[in-house]
Length: 194
Image 1 (cartoon, rainbow, N blue to C red):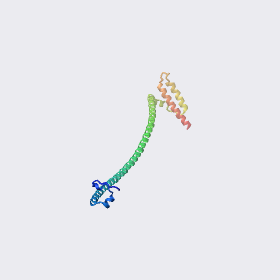
Image 2 (image 1 turned 90 degrees about the vertical axis):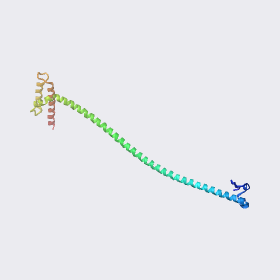
Image 3 (image 1 turned 180 degrees about the vertical axis):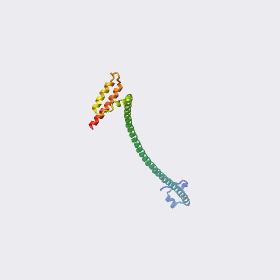
Image 4 (image 1 turned 180 degrees about the horizontal axis):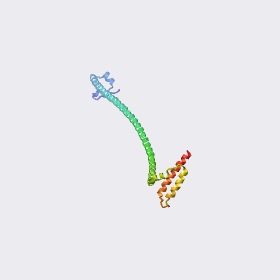
């Protein structure tokens, strides 16, 4: 430090070096220097305290920031885990829905098939109702038939009697006779094969 620049120093001190004042300075100059040094010491101590305070504040804020970062990282990890679980849950739900839709499609096809079968059976039953009044009579007409040859003879005799071209003929009766004849013939055929 070549030249001392002090705020409240008298004119004779200005321009002198610190060493010159210490070695050759008057009592008054030394008192002024002493006051200046005291004030400078207080200013430096105040600045040091402010820096320490700022440093402490910085350390506290850094610690708080690190804690917040840890908390945010923890939340991020938890959210990622939750998102992964939600994605897996969604995928399972989607798989269940796909499975449900395919099962629904199969059930629909099965239902359509059963519906068609039911309608066919209903139609057949309606036809049977039409011929139902003759079923008991026809079974009586074929009573005692126990082989294919007697079945064939009885069928021909019944057709001659109930043929629609005859006076006593009945178309529905002929259809019922034909159905029962086919049924009995297939039974005799099955017995013969067995």
